[in-house]
Image 1 (tube, protein in one colour):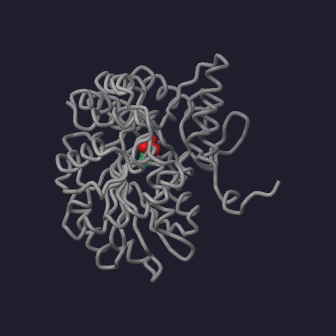
Image 2: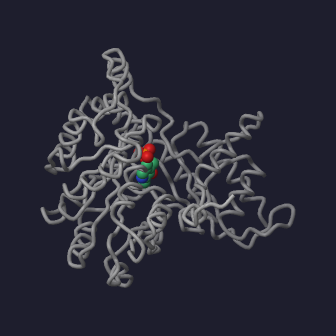
Image 3: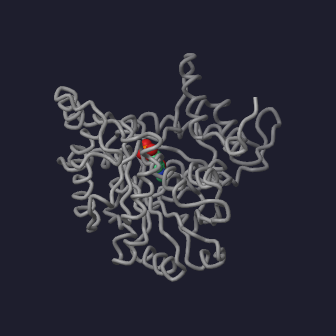
Length: 398
Ligand SMILES: *Cc1c(COP(=O)(O)O)cnc(C)c1O
């Protein structure tokens, strides 16, 4: 069978692969501790589930408009005003089947061969793949732990070409957990505007922030920034709704119109019931969200403090999301019990899974081979046990 060149170029999602392997070991009765999950371990809050049940009972089960119901668009408009100080009209909002779908559609509508899109690494695994699927070139800027994995304007200026179309910002970040300060975003926005770059801002973890940090949307910095920015957001992470598949963009009306046209010939509107539930998620009382965030913060403290105490491991304390991004590169060159030399994040994570049944995601999946991603969307008990096992595993390396 011949397949398209387009699909042959796509790398399968490594984060999903590790998670699947750990789940399979678990299903075989093995005592696996999984830090691979890219989703909250909490269930969807009751108020949101009840809104979905009401929607079913009201026969809210038909096709909706392609870009989402007016009611959900209005809830998103309310949210953008409340959380980000941004004003949008309905024709500037498009609801899709998850934020991943939002970005996919956007990439298809905006870019093609010859275009370049700047992506800071470590990146969310799907960003470069989806830019590539659109035919465009992902231009990766590497960041480091010393700068909490954030890019600087100098780095951006070095990679600019006449073909650079856009820059991607993900704050708080998956996989690093770090969020940009307002002043850092101001510098990036100024550079983007001066160089005619569209800003794509993925803010899907915006409520999951710690130590009193304040999230800033780069779109909120000025009217001009808003016009030249596509905000991507969704309900998956902050409301524990990964399975409901609702994401959205807020952008200039012309962009929304083009992307809606694509969606109209592919998926049509997202699930009507999920849309109804998302209204409640966005505009209902947020006590449940804050409770989840408090829990994540406790777990972050335990995970990061204990990891950083392991000789050969370093880990900065992230200020958002539910991931830590420890550096294991000091262990490179050491040998396991069978004499196999550890040569990067893939070797180390495989060693960990085989030797101690702890699943973490190799940083190479995110363009950072020194690190690995560890999700703290799991219980404190599992975190303590898992990090203890990592310490024991590291001690086995000679
Ligand atoms: C999880 C995630 C998404 C996609 O979430 P959906 O479930 O598709 O809404 C988008 N961006 C980042 C950075 C993520 O971590």
